[in-house]
Length: 210
Ligand code: B1M
Image 1 (cartoon, protein in one colour):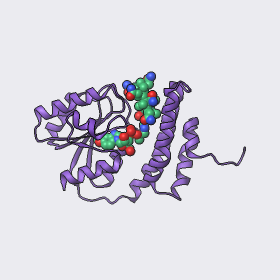
Image 2 (cartoon, protein in one colour):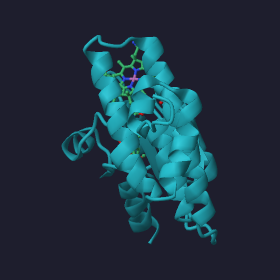
Image 3 (tube, protein in one colour):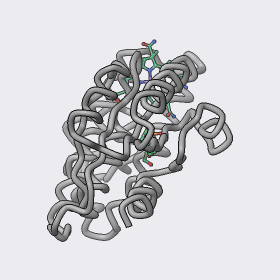
Image 4 (spheres, protein in one colour):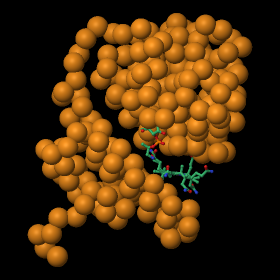
């Protein structure tokens, strides 16, 4: 009904792109940015993912919900950046979503948080070839690479990337994350660190550069 406020979750699930930014802005007056990410935005995407899995919604709706959540993240990002403390770089980290995988929402959150905590991020984007990761790490002398994968089908590309890094750049460490992973799996594919969420990635970076 007119005048009734929809929750950010229902806005994301319904894919109401034009309302997400304002709705997130309003929520930000009351709650912490990362609390909104963890308690509202990610759970809403989980519901969307389940519906897609069950065949209750299809690719166009999945895409629309992803676009909607990006609008909400935009508001969250502005808030985090405005409250951030710019300081001397604490270290440089490469981030990439692995080859074959175009899911980059999680990686982008990790990037915002790392930057906010004073790390410089070289963002190679999504669907990134292992060779580009190795070349960039070598050229830039980066000692911490962060890889993200969201699909069971792309974890082997993550493993391939780790093998390439480890064989060619022995001093370079790798942290991995993404909904499809856990600590056990991360260790099995040769990663040095596993981060459950963006805050976890910051803690790892701190330990590596600390
Ligand atoms: Co797709 N998708 N999707 N999708 N999608 C999943 C992953 C899926 C689980 C949905 C489902 O079926 N239940 C499923 C994968 C199944 C599997 O594993 N085999 C799936 C599929 C099948 C697909 C397509 C193949 C669909 C198709 O085309 N038929 C296709 C894939 C194309 C490709 O990659 N080649 C596809 C496409 C898309 C969209 C483009 C529509 C969109 C992505 C938009 C974008 O990213 N720009 C999309 C979305 C949105 C999802 C779901 C619904 C949500 C993902 C997400 O952004 N979550 C997802 C279902 C789900 O996850 N519940 C699904 C929120 C995000 C913040 O979480 O990325 O986990 P996450 O990041 C977290 C942590 O994991 C961690 O920190 C973040 C913050 O806490 N983290 C790190 C992540 N990376 C890290 C790295 C670190 C540290 C921490 O260090 C480096």
